Length: 464
Image (cartoon, helix red, strand yellow):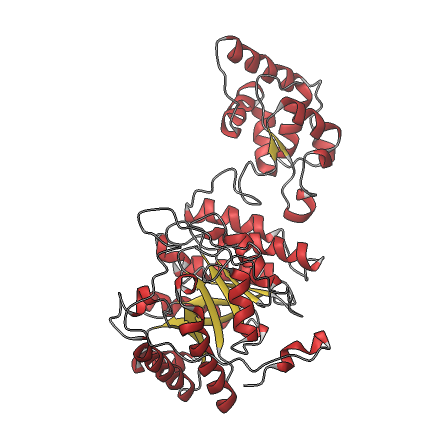
C-alpha cells in the first residue's frame, strides 16, 4: 500500500515498503515485562524517537452521553439536550467540538438522540456506538445516523482471555463487521480497545492495514479510535511500545497508512496522564481526541473536554472560534441541575481553581491579579479571580471577596472602609482568637454578610 501522500509536507523521498503480516500466535502475548499484575506497571524505553507531525487541522470529539454517563446516574432527556446545546455553543462556528457520541439501546437514549438531531446542528455531529449485530445496524440506519462506533478489541488480554478467539479469528470477525456496516451505508469507527497492551506489529498494524484496504476499495472512510482503555499510555520520547502514545500514532500513520483525519485518541486517567497523552496524540499526527465533559467516566474517568479546549488554544495559538466562557456554564449546570460534585481544585471548573488563600498571594492579587492568576479568567471563562479569607485576610481582601463573589458592577462595589466589611472582619478575628484555624468557606461568608447587613446581602444575591 502506498502512503507517500501523507508525507507531502516533508518534500523528501519516503520509504514505504513496510508490510506487516498478522502473527497468529498460539499463546497470548501479555507483555509481562511491562505488566506484571502483582506490581505497578513498568515503563520501558527503547530510545527510538519518532518525528512530530502536527496535523493541518485538529479537533475534539465527545463521548459524554456514551462512555461518560456509564459511570454515573444516567442523564435525563432534557439534561442531554441542554448539554448538547452548550457543547454546540462551546465548539463555536468552526465546530472544534466535531462529534458527540450516543447510545441507542433504550427508549430514553433514542428520544434524547432524536431531540438533539432536531436541533439540526452541523456540529457536534451525532454518532453512535453499537453492538455488532444486524438489528443494531438496522436501528442506526433507521434513525439516520451516518457514523457508528464498533468495538474491535485488539490486545490478547481481550482476544484470547475475554473472547476465547485466536488473532486470525478476531481479525476475520472484525473485518466482516466493518464490511457489514459499510453495506448498510454507515461509516465505521473502529474502537481498538486496549491498544496500549496490544501486540502492535503482530496484530494492530496488520489489522488496520486491512481496514485501509477496505477503505480504498469502497471509498468509505474508516476511522481508527486508539483506545487507551486502562490509561497505560505514556508521552515520553523513546518509550517502547505498546505504551508509547507517539509510537502508536506514528506507527498507524506510517506503517498502516491511516491519514491524520481518521485517527482519534481515546484515553483514561488511571495514571494521571489522560490530558498529556491526548495532547501527545495531537502532536504526533492524530487529528481527533475523544473526551467527556468534566472528564466523567468509569474508574478515573475520561479526558476532560474543557482541558483539551485549553490545550487546543495553547497549541494552535488561538481559540479557533470557541466560546470558552460556556465551560463555566457547563460546570454550573452539572452542579446545580444534575447534582454532580466538582472537586474545588479541578482546573478551569472547580470553585477554587483561580482562588488564592495564602495571605501574601492575596495581597499580590489585590495589587495586580496577573501576578497569581493563570490568565484573565474573567474575560475567558467569566470567572473572576477569587480570594479565600482566613486569619490574615484584611479589610481589602474581604471587600474584594464581596465584589467578586457577587459579581457586583463597578457602581455597587463595596469599599474596604465600609461598615459591613469592618463588622465581618471583627467576626473573623473573634473566631480565630477563640481557636479557629481553617479558612472561611463561601457559604460561611455569605451567612456572615447576611447577619451583619441583611439588606445589602439580599440585594447582592439578586445580582449574582
